[in-house]
Image (cartoon, rainbow, N blue to C red; front, side):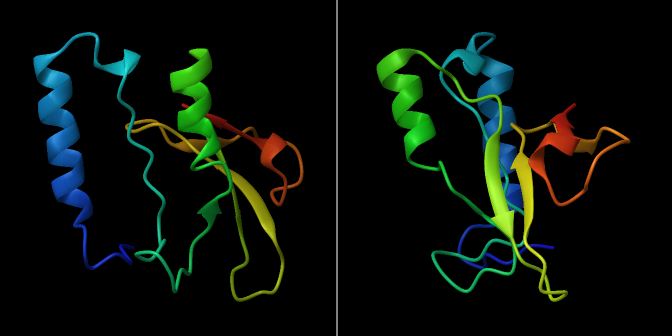
Length: 109
């Protein structure tokens, strides 16, 4: 579900795919992390990546590219879930064991 009416997700994907098609080294400097159900600046129903600023800074300053971004969200059931956002086209996958409310139960694939 897309929550951001200001930036169409398909347009962002199309741009990313066009850049990756033209440069085989693109992953050295460009990653796309999609945040499902995150609103534009506010009003989010999805999670907000807690390292959205720190991760790119670490990539630029320390050559430490993010492999995932941690995210917390609280759906209508009142629980808080820790998950990861993966670089597109990867998706977070459940490992098959562990508490689904904890980030350690997921990996990018």
